[in-house]
Length: 244
Image 1 (cartoon, rainbow, N blue to C red):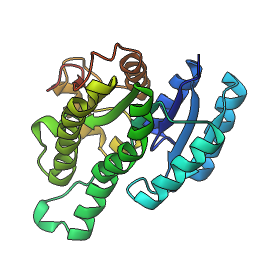
Image 2 (image 1 turned 180 degrees about the vertical axis):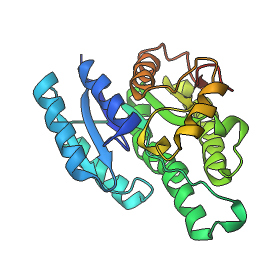
Image 3 (image 1 turned 60 degrees about the horizontal axis):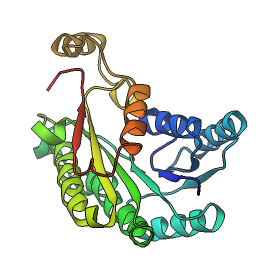
């Protein structure tokens, strides 16, 4: 049986890092990506290789850039083999009024959060179709379902991720490839550390589970979805402590 080869974007910290650890524990060969935090990424790769004895390739670059993505996949294929699992996790947020947002900022959000899915999926799909198997998992947000004030661009990008997921799942289901998304609530990551203590407490009061989620919980769910039957496809699975 050939080893699973997973490509995880945005893996230097937070949810992506936790998914990389969980997948390494499961014995998957890994290619992990970040845009800028290469030192953190390389350290993670060393830890995973030493601890779990799996190959772990690091790739620094912008997954919203098709040229970089093509080069990244060529490198993965040469050193590890064809990608069998793709986790599109790279993402950024932007908080502020839409009327104060520049077109450059809008495009940056869309390229990072949505165009990256197009670039990575387009490159991964041909081999998956050829092999009649594969798993694609997109990390989304509850704001992609309901929208958030002062996060219009982020909400729009994640709404796009959800629609992308459902549409691509229908396209690839005949080839035995599943495409799903996890819509995260408030996860205790660096992205959400800008909240003041009062804001954190107000948010926690709104969440029935009474706390923020952890990256490790997202990672455990991610592995569960990847290991699910291919009949589970086109689903936006919400992980938010009962919040939305």
